[in-house]
Image (cartoon, rainbow, N blue to C red):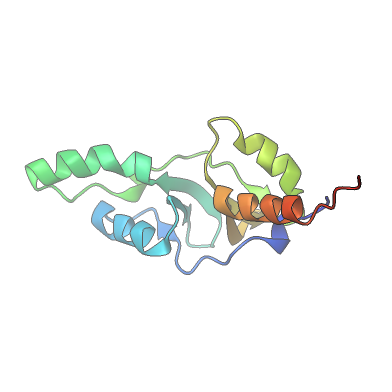
Length: 136
């Protein structure tokens, strides 16, 4: 099977910005349906990634102290793992078997062009599996 990331990726409705406050970023993540979103700079380059996992401890602490001054840049992962639209999903699926992210920004150079998730990869692999014909 030679399915490429560009065949299963989805556009990003709204990415995060480093200067966003945590409650705004969390709302965007929740609204997106993904477990995290890429962080872009003013030139639309991917500079980080923020996941639900990153947010929960700060939400706990912030809600206890009523402190919503945490910015995305303070807690984002600064070296996000990305894929290109030309990457093979079998290779991506193999990368996803470990503790790697569940969502990958898809980039063209360093510019965001979409997102691909473990869910998207599973759908494509399952379709290929279902379409297999067993010859007896």
